[in-house]
Image 1 (cartoon, helix red, strand yellow):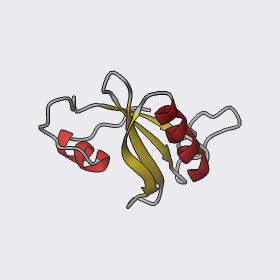
Image 2 (tube, rainbow, N blue to C red):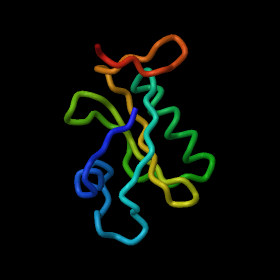
Image 3 (cartoon, rainbow, N blue to C red):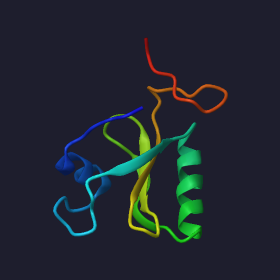
Length: 96
């Protein structure tokens, strides 16, 4: 799924400065099955050398997410969205 947000909105969600050097205005996101899995994925990424940007937490839209930067500085969001369920293979199921 492709979702587009303004640079300012995306920066605010990630907790970074929109005009700061190093923020490209793009993040990659992975949706997972549960808040516990968000924690596990973020912890694993950090243990592999990623930098924690925003600790996982409940978010205003009703989900749970956190951000890390990979070693090249790209931002990744790991999210659980209870409004977009995943199928048995982990694929996003969009509403009709």
